[in-house]
Length: 293
Image (cartoon, rainbow, N blue to C red):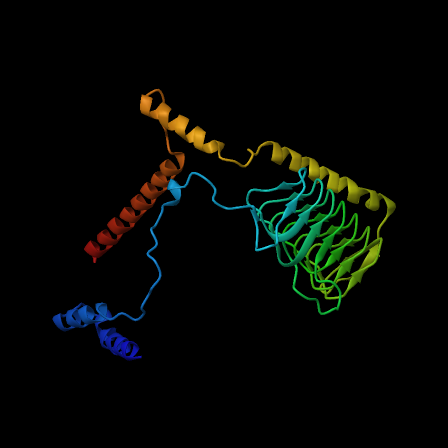
């Protein structure tokens, strides 16, 4: 408290100095203010590391949380930028796309066969549900969850589709062959019956699904799975083989047979040089305007 009062007094004294040039008295006040420490920190020092020096992605796609472990089928695919935490079950041919977060830290999340969770979707299971049913998340087979959705302790049947930017709250349910239009909000304990299209905020009945639309739900999930296969084919398996590659690359560079070009550092230097040139141009223009005045 004493330090805070001292700092407040010094800041009030520095008020006139900020609006004018520093006089000798202001310089003494500033020196006194520099010696006032408002907070005591016991945290360890953090060493800054430039992003251009990072060669490998340190993010983990699968994270265990105590005794809650992700269970991922061999044929399932998880994007390197996605995060699967805790009690999450991904069955055969499931695809989890870029920047998706599946949080099974409080309860179980199960994604059925050939279902897909698309970009930036968040699925979280609460500890309990106000509806009195299980708070776990159950997603059936051949389900398409479009980008930017939020699902919390809900149930989705087979051959269903959740539109982009939709929200499913605790206890809500979508039955088989049901569709939720983009941007909809399904309130707690609300149920979308089989063969119906719902939409709006809050979601309401819009129309019934046609037979062709029912068949298209399975075909869409199959198409997205084929795209996931292509993505998976481009990824290297997780392991420590990169250590051998790095050792070989270093040996080749030291022998003089090849030259290592740090592309990330090169791009950073180019951007920094452009920023410096722009700052110099602004300072020159400011100096010229002052000279004219």
